[in-house]
Every structure is written in structure tokens, then in C-alpha cells.
Image (cartoon, rainbow, N blue to C red; front, side, top):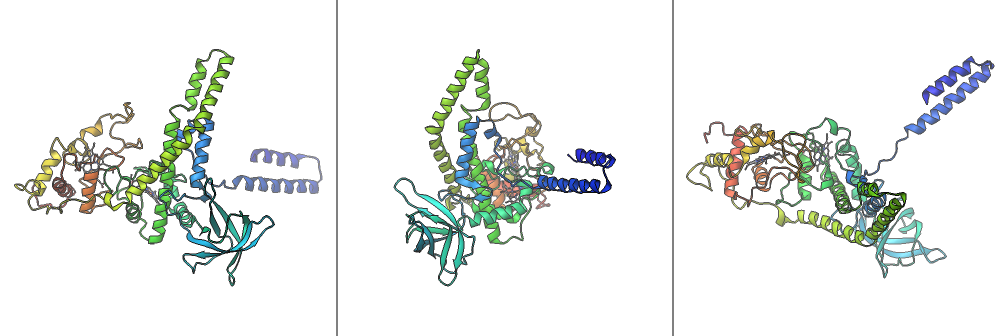
Length: 490
Ligand code: HEC
Ligand code: HEC
């Protein structure tokens, strides 16, 4: 477009018109260019991006999944979370105290409320969510506050509420305030790496190794919890405060506890959204990918047959969306919710059954030798297999790093070495550096060996071959490999 403007100006000045006509036309042309340019540079508001799996589906199914996600999680500009998901979305609980005015149809237009935190400041533009109970399904409605009279406490609403809203009806002031605050901080601090949808594809991702985490699997590598249990809110809090040593993930030490807490909720929000989308796509891709339809169409011999295949497919889709889909949505959503609730259950924190062994004292597992010597023996043993990944000297160069590994579906990865659940290459830690991603306290290392590094080939050894006494010996030996106790000779 700038080129066509230039050539137009060039032609204009060569044309036989008077100078003033030329000048007026020139100014007009500049103004138009400015308007176009400013229109073009206007940023599109961000929105969640569909996963690769979703994109491969038939448009109708894709659309159904997308609208289900919006129903549960809202949109980027209006994030929300239902009560059955373990996300602290924010808001102050209360009830409607008195209906102050109604319109001709009996709908409430102004009211007073009673909040659990009575000294909360109410502002014009704040949102009130009311709980509307009905015989069929309970729903909620959100309206913004048009004006607020401090003296009387009367709120005038931007939109009238239905008749069924009466004194005593439950309400929440600014129901998603935590999520919105978390989102604002996320956009400021995390977006460049983890991106709007939490897929880890921010603009800085291309220069980082390891890559920023894709939250959509709901998997966190370094946790205090037992194997197969997600990260607790406490784990995420600690992670954001201390960062991940030796990677691009920064430590947000100067953020306050409240700010960190809202970021934790927003991270969980993106994780759950991604997990539910993924779960739905996995179910839908059994029958409803575009490539399946294309394949069936390719077998059809005539235009008439093609039409029939299309029609049959459409019927199957409509059938699926009406009968199975709502059930699948419920099942997957509840299992995602449950898995995150479990993670915050103190019962699921992994605690050693015995105290840490003194590294220079005898092993609790094999009291005839020192803890370090037993740790070394275990490390080199064929049963524990540490060597096959971390190498004899702990440099992270074991045999498995030079072999081609298989994907869960049995096919081989293109790149040599180990891969994680995200399908990305991952190297066993070089233990001689003494830098640990999941924290360097003895309890951190204990948990790493006992519960593994989730989503990676680093196995969970606890309860499977190694007892807690042996794990402490290994922890001591790992410190030794990292340069501690330089005078010891295990
Ligand atoms: C400069 C890039 C960068 C920024 C900014 C960043 N991260 Fe990360 N983040 C990473 C990388 C890289 C990893 C993966 C590290 C690894 O795999 O060991 C990661 C991992 C994570 C993990 C997963 C931890 C685990 O144990 O699996 C979470 C959660 C996370 N980041 C949240 C955040 C949040 C929240 C913010 C903003 C407050 C943020 N990150 C900002 C790069 C970044
Ligand atoms: C199948 C390969 C494999 C085996 C077997 C294995 N590891 Fe690992 N280990 C890894 C990988 C991969 C990582 C890096 C994971 C990550 O952080 O991305 C790792 C990381 C670690 C870490 C670093 C944790 C941190 O917080 O940074 C320690 C410590 C460790 N392994 C110890 C052991 C010990 C001890 C054994 C044997 C009892 C062992 N590993 C067996 C693959 C393996």
C-alpha cells in the first residue's frame, strides 16, 4: 500500500494541475495514509489459541469444544472459574439486603447488599454476581454498578435483574478479582515466555533451553507431592519465589505473597483450561478428525456417494454432540478438578519415614559401610540404573543419552537421547555441577529421587526398589558428586 501511495504522489506532481490543487490533493493523500496506518497498527486484543489437537478436528466438534471452554473459563478479557474448580477466583461474598427499586416488569434496578467484609469499598463499574436459583438449573448473572450512594448504600445497576432476585439472594462483589489481578501480573511478568494460553510459546521461548513450560498438560516437574500427584499451591508459590536454577525461569523474589498467590491461581487456571481442552480433544479425535473424514471421502467413488458419506458423518457428529459430549465434558472436568484438589491435600505431601543420614556416618540401610559408600554402590548398581542416564561419573552422559528412544506409541523420536512428556529433548542432570532445578535442600533431593521428576524420564524410585534409608544415602552421594565433602573417599 505505501508503494501505491508513492506512485500516486509522483503522478500527482507531474500532472498539469495548479500548485494549490496539487497541495490540497497531497495533504488529503497524507491524511488518508495516516488514517490507514493507524488503523492497521491497532493491536488485536489477545485471545486463547486452540491446541494443535483441536485444530485437527471437524469444525463442528472444534466449535463445541471451544464454546464449552468459554462457558467454563470465560474469555481472555473476562476470565472466570466455576465454583467446582479448585481456583480461588476472588470476590467478596454477601447477600442482597433490600430491593430498593424495580422497573415496570418487576425487575430489580437498585438494591442494597450486605458483604461478609463490611468495610469493602464499592466503586462505580464494580461487578455484582447474583446467584439465581430456579427449578431447572441454578445460574448466575453478572451486572455492573452504574452508581453508588455512599450514605444510603444504594447501588443502581447497569441492567435490571430478574424477578426471582429477592432479599437474601446470595451475591458476590467483583467475583473474579483474583483471576483478573493474576492475569495482569501474568501479562507483565510471564507472557513473554509462557504466552497467552500458557502453551510456553512466548516470543522469548525460541532462545531458551529448556523451553518455558507448556502448562496445558497440567504437569509440573518439581513438586513436594507423591508420584502421580500434581503440584500443590504451596509448591507453585515456592517455585515462583525461587525460580528454577540453571534455566530461564526467573525468581520473582520481590513480588509480595498476595501477588504470588494470584499468579499461582492464574497458572492453575491456564493449566486446568488446557487439560480440559486436551481431554475433550483426545475423546473427539477417535472419530472426528478432518483427516478421518477426508479418508472416508477418498474411498467414495461417485459424487452421490461422497454426499452420503458427508451426510452420515454429519449425523454422527450431531449424535455425539447431543448424547456423549455433555457427559464427557462433565467427566473430564471433574477428574481435572479432583486431581488439583488432591494435590493440596497434606496427605499427599511426600515425607521421608526416616531422618536424613549423616553423610559421613554409617548408612542406615547398610550399617557396615558409610552412607556415602552405600550411596555410591547404589548409584553404580544395575538395579537403580542411575548410570544408564547420568553416567558413571555423574556427567549426565549415560548410554541412554546416545540411543534413539521410543515414543509412547512405539515410534522412534527423530533426535537421539531422552525426551519428556511434552515431546521435547531432555538431558539427565549433570550432577557434578551441584545445580538442582527442584531446589538444593536435602528434602528436595530426597523427593526428586523418591517421586522422580514429573513428566520426564527421571523415574520415581520410592517404594519401587529403593527404601527411604537407601534414598538418603543416594542424596548424600549426589552432594558428593556435586563437590561437597571433598575429603571423603566413598
Ligand atoms: C524468561 C522466560 C520465563 C519467564 C519470564 C517466566 N518463565 Fe516460567 N519457566 C520458564 C522456563 C524456561 C521453564 C522450564 C524450566 C524447566 O523445564 O526446568 C519455566 C517453568 C515454569 C513452571 C513449571 C515449573 C515446574 O516445576 O515444572 C511454572 C509453573 C512457571 N514457569 C510459571 C511462571 C510464571 C507464573 C511466570 C511469571 C510470574 C513465569 N513462569 C515467568 C521460563 C520463564
Ligand atoms: C531413564 C533415565 C534416568 C534414570 C534411570 C535416572 N535419572 Fe535422574 N534424571 C534424569 C533426567 C532426564 C533428569 C532431568 C529432568 C529435568 O529436570 O528435566 C534427571 C534429574 C536428576 C536429578 C536432578 C534433580 C533436580 O532437582 O535438578 C537428580 C538428583 C537425579 N536425576 C538423580 C538420579 C538418581 C540418584 C538416579 C538413580 C537412583 C537417577 N537419577 C536415575 C534421568 C534419569
